[in-house]
Length: 172
Image (cartoon, rainbow, N blue to C red):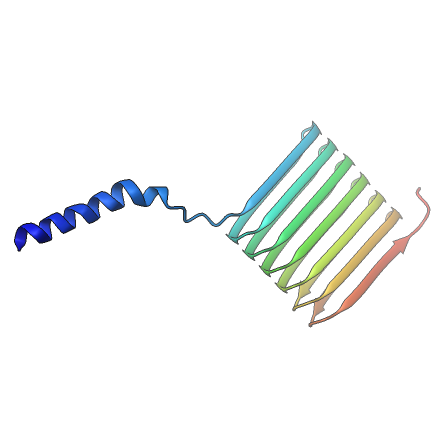
């Protein structure tokens, strides 16, 4: 009886040492970074399950940061030209974020918290800034800044909002 328990314990030990490491407990997050240019900076941090983040940079001194905590979130940041900066903190599940910056010295800061939110923002021009704080579920936000020296700030608490932000002036 003692030998049988000892053999059983030994077999479990063998299982944990040799077989368990081959079983994947990965959170299956995916990240993609592509950089072309000089001194671009990209940072992606993901905690959760099945999150996807990508950063594409083309130019000089662009800086992008994506933090995701949750499940099934998507984030994409594209930057071209000179000294654009994008910061995203996304928590919750099934959220979508897309940011496109072209021009010089554009700044985007987004905090997105909830379930099923969608944020799409475009900054075309130079010296534009946008600050979005979105808390709630199933919100759709579209932001367009076309021109130069434009600034916008929004804090939204609630569910099911459809918000369009459009700022335009001639390129200076």
